[in-house]
Length: 180
Image 1: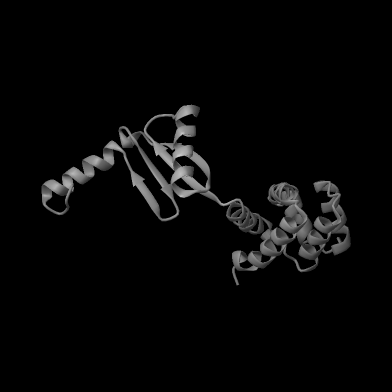
Image 2 (image 1 turned 180 degrees about the vertical axis):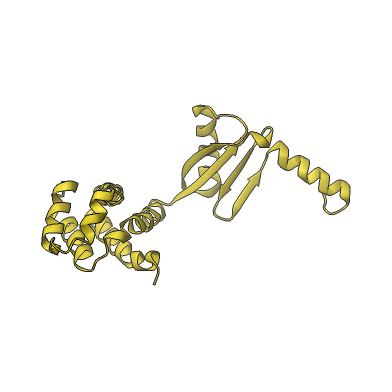
């Protein structure tokens, strides 16, 4: 069984509980912190140290993460008891997916030849929110090979408004393979 398959039920349970208790932000924050902490080599060694009991490992995590919420503390205790600490980054990833769905957010990546101004990003975000009736989480990358324009990607949606994309279409049209 892969780590993502193991993580899904934990993430779902954590998210449903957090949504019910209106503590999504707190859970998200602590899962992000935990995912960063367990990447540390010194912490990874603790997972496999036979001289440290599960209870001691749990106490260490509660201190490192400064966990004050009993339900979050119990969640980490469960992960430790079932040797699931290495799964935390995957739990975080799945938790974020649940959160985005809950927020009716759509993750959109825009790739442009040049840096977009905040105003341009806001204009694109508003247009996409109007079109899809969802909150838009916009990320931006620069790819100078596009020459100009932009590509907008989200899940299976791709809107290619780049000069490179238009030239590629023109090339295909001239070959007789496609219509403009």
